[in-house]
Image (cartoon, rainbow, N blue to C red):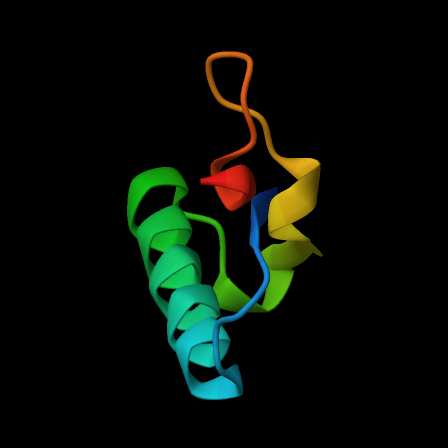
Length: 61
């Protein structure tokens, strides 16, 4: 049972998240042969203030 976790900044619409889950599921089924019913996709959203790149928070720009 493949489980895929996506970590991303919050702010995407439900339609965008739905499409992401669908495309990830398609990619996993195509590459692993796992049936779609066995593929789980978890989206973990975080606030922009919780991300740092190169020692700085992009949200501080």
